[in-house]
Amino acid sequence: MTRAGLGADFGKLFTAAISSNLADGIGRLAIPLTAVALTQDPLAIGLLTALTYVPWLIFGIPSGMLVDRIDRRKAMAIANVARMLTAALVAVSIATGTISIAILAAATLFLGMGETLFDNATNAVVPSLVPRKKFGAANGRIQAAQVGVDMFVATPLSGLLYAIAVALPMIVSGAGYIVAVVLVLALPVAAAGPRAVPGEEATAPIPLREAMRFLWNHRYLRSVTLLTTAIGASIALAQSVTVLVFVEHFGVTEAAVGVVTAGIGVGGLAGSLLAGRLMQRLGYGRTLVGGSVLGAVGLIVVGVAPWLWLAMVGYAISAFGISTWNVPWATLRQVIIPDRILGRVVGAIRTVTWFFMPIATMLGAWIARAYLPVPFVVGGAIALVVSLVGIPLLMRADAEVALASEQDVDSGSAAVVPKETDAVV
Image 1 (cartoon, helix red, strand yellow):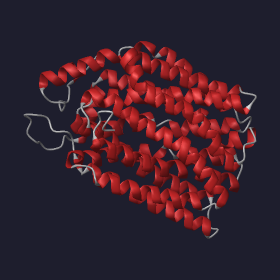
Image 2 (cartoon, one colour):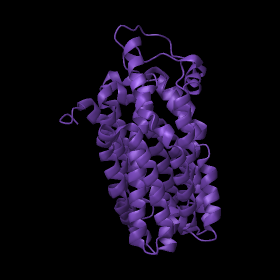
Image 3 (cartoon, one colour):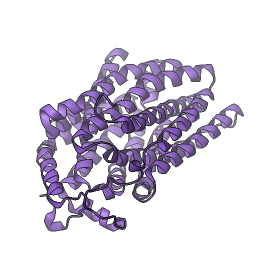
């Protein structure tokens, strides 16, 4: 991280993200694998997938308020301690033979709430550790840690651990959360709160209603949020029964599922690492358009693929596109949103964008009862149509970033909440 110009402090955050995502990835595969051993009903598996989105609906804004009001290092530590305890309880339930779909569902909710707080705090800490011109590079590194560790290390490891002992993945997952706790508590004081603005005196936190007013009045940010909501719901519909598709439709063994997803992760990791360079060469708009279109096309390929290798290629293409979208979208938010309300506004955005995902996931699971791959075709097609319709909106992203940067320089502060007359048309 130091050689990359992001600094040793960001290196600590990056390493914490690696450890936390290792734990996330191990648990994320272990729970559906355990569920598949209990039932092959697509609706039951779809329910667990849907529940992964619910925490952002009930805890997205509250977690943002916490991130803006308390020490962000402590917020990340609290989130991971809670997830460690949840993983331990699941491991005990498996070991004692009392595990059930209900317990897995509850664990999915609690793990998701911890992830909501940790990810929100991570996103808010980045501007305090790196200069604005390096936001894209920093977000790309974080995204690469999420995808690379999840796909290439966590999921293959989870499958192997599951083959050794069903409870073992959750035990290792809990250990990963503890390592991340130690690392985030070692971050400097600068990471505790919003970045300081030269010449600006400390003020009381902006009320939640003002943060929400910022999102509502910023018409461009509001419009992209709604577009993201539609695309995200389509992707959620497509991926509703992913594990079941690979295990039941393509005949992949439980122990080998992680290896298959590692192959898929090639696309996600490549997208994360290349997104920053694509943003520099193509701009925000073209990168967002390309990412959304590729993400949709890849899902359609998975749905129509007659062979496992082709489905993996399609999923890799989709993962590349989604990762390529995520980096400029995160950077766009960090540039436009004032840092003092970043946590709350991002929490609100994710609450909105994830609102329809559980519904779409259950719809996809219901469709899958007829034929497992169908949700990939339906979800991918909807995402493609929405992406094409949204091209004019996304192509304005570069102008919006330039305008936000100019306003930040002119005001000398990134903590100005616009009125309706100041909103971008």
